[in-house]
Image 1 (tube, one colour):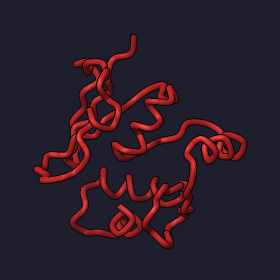
Image 2 (cartoon, helix red, strand yellow):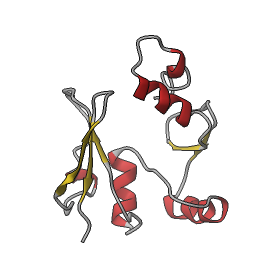
Image 3 (tube, one colour):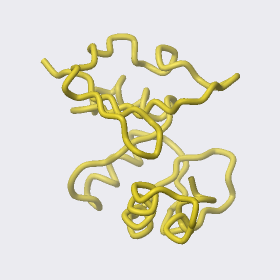
Image 4 (cartoon, helix red, strand yellow):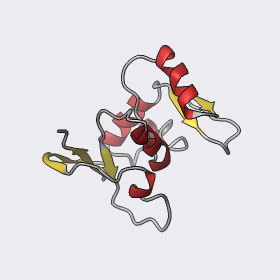
Length: 132
């Protein structure tokens, strides 16, 4: 994402939805949890260490909702009971590796509501599982 979205708005091959996402994504503050990266760009901050401690600090600093990406980090949020709502983006590609959702803590995910299933112009299906 960090390689494409900062310049996605200028990409002539991008769909209108992709250009809009790029425009919205750029000014958002980003917090990247990583144990391997040395630096980040594009309005991002690199954090390391204990997730509970980092989250406690972020609660004082940030207001509103947090969006969490990636099965490992999102799974840690799920296991701590910190997820109020989940929205999944299913891209139409085949991957040969990665962490399965069940291995990351999504073993009790609710079924998707039919009315909350949306195909967006850029390709991925957006699925919001039913609550309650």
